[in-house]
Image (cartoon, rainbow over all chains, first blue to last red; front, side, top):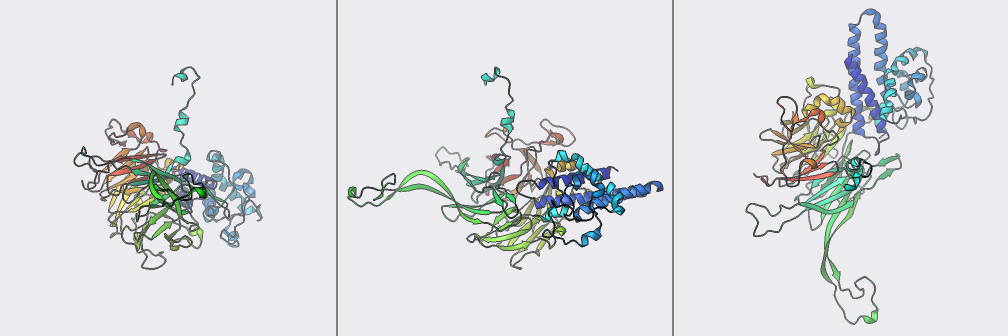
Length: 173
Length: 452
C-alpha cells in the first residue's frame, strides 16, 4: 500500500509540475515535460502492479471494491494522455462536483477524433460531447481520487491552470 | 554601523542575500589560449575576463611562469534581449545557454553565444590608436574654415586609451523550433553545430540564412516521443565526427561522411540498466546533462544526475570509468524530485591532460576525480570559507562511519547552492566555477602546468 500511495503522490506532483510549467517563462520545456511524463507512467505502472498484488491477496468479498479502485485508477492516468482537448476546463478543478459531468473516457470515442495539435480544439471551448454516460459514471466517481488529491494540493503548487491532456502538453511545443 | 544601535532594528539580511535572477551565471568558457574567459548570465549579458600578463622581471623566481596573473573584466555587453514569438505566443528567454570561442585567426576574438532560439557571432576587438591631424576637421570633428587651411597634412595614428569594442557580426536565427541546448565549433574552423531537443543543425559561420539539419529525432506523432537530445559536441580533431547525448542516457557518435542526415548513428554508447536500482526516478537520473570529448579525442565524459562517466570511443558496451558524484542523494530522490533539484543539469569538464575530470554538486561543492587513482575530492566554492589566495581545503559529506570535524551532513546540504557551470583552462591548472551569481577562479600555484 505504501508503494501505491507513493506512486499516487508522485503522479499528483508530476501533474502539478506539468501544469505549472505552462506558465513558465520561455515556454514549455520539452525535456522536462518528457521526464515528468515518464515518471508519471512509471508511477502508474507501479501503482497498477501494487494494486493488482493487493487485489490477489485480498479475500473474495472485497474484490468488487478493489476492482473498482484498480480499474479507474489505471484508467484515469491512461485517460489523461489519450484525452483530446474536448473536455471543459473546469473538469479537473471541480472534480468533486463534476464527477458525473466529466467527459467519457472510452477509447471508442477517441478513434473518431483526429490526433495532432492542429486538430485539437482549444481547451477554453466547452465540451461538445454528450456528458452523461450512465454506464461509466460509477467509474468516474472513483477515477477522481487522484485528481481530488491534486485539487487539494493545487493551492500549494501554484495558480490553478486550465485542463490540458498530458501528451498535448508535449506536442504543443 | 553605529547608527543602527538607536534606530529600530531592521533586518537587512534579506537584501544582502537577495540575488537578482538576471545575474545568475548560466555558462562559463575559456578561449583556446586561456587568456580570455567569458561568462553568460540569465539576463542575456556576456562578461569577458582577460588574464593579466605580469611583465617578466629580474626578481621573478625560477619556475614561475610569466602568465601567473589574475583575471580582470575586459568587456561586458548585452548579447541577447528578451524576445517574443508572436506565432506561438511564447516568451523567449534572454538567458545565455552556451558560449563557445572560435579559434583566433587575427587580432580580433570571435565568440558564439546562444539563448533558446538564436545564435550570435560576436567580434571582440581592441582599439588603442586613433587617427589625428585631419585636414578638414578639427579635434572635435567640426569642419574647419577653409580659409584657415594653408597646408596639407596626413592624419597620423596616435596611441589612445585602450577601448574594447564588441560588435555582432552574424545572427543565426529561425533555425530551431525547440530550445537550443548546445553549440559546438567544428575543427574545420568554418562550421559549427547547434542542437535543440529534437534536432541538430550545422551552420557555416559566414551564412546566416541557411543551415543543414543533420539530426532529426522528432517522431511523426509527438505522442510517441521517448527521448530528447540533451547535448552535442564536435570531435576536437575529426571534422566529420560529432556526438550527441540523449535523455535516455545514451550517446550517439555520428559520422557526417556516412550520409547527409545522421539519424542513423555510427556508434551507440549505452550502459545496460541495473535492474536492482530501478526506481520511479530511474529515467530522470539517467538523463545525460552534459557530454565532452577529451582533448585527445579518444574519450567521452558524460554527466547524469548522480554520476560522471568516462567512455572510450572504441567501446560502446559501457563506460570505462564511473565516478559517484553524490551517491548519498540516491535515497533522497523523492524530495529532490519534489523540490525540482532532480532536474538540475550539471556540466562536466576535463583538465588539459585528460587526467582529471571535474563536475559540480550542491552546497557550493564541486568534485574532482583523478582518473589514474580513481579517487575523488570535494572542494567548496563559497566566499565565507575561502579568502583570496587561501588554499582550498577539501570538504566531506558525512555518510556514515567516523565523523570528522568539518563534515557536512546530507540533510544540512543547501540545495539552492548548486554548481552547474564550470570551465578548465586549456593548458594550465586554472578553473573557473560559477556559483549562482559569483564566479570563482582557482589556480594551482604548486603545479601550474598539467605535466606535473
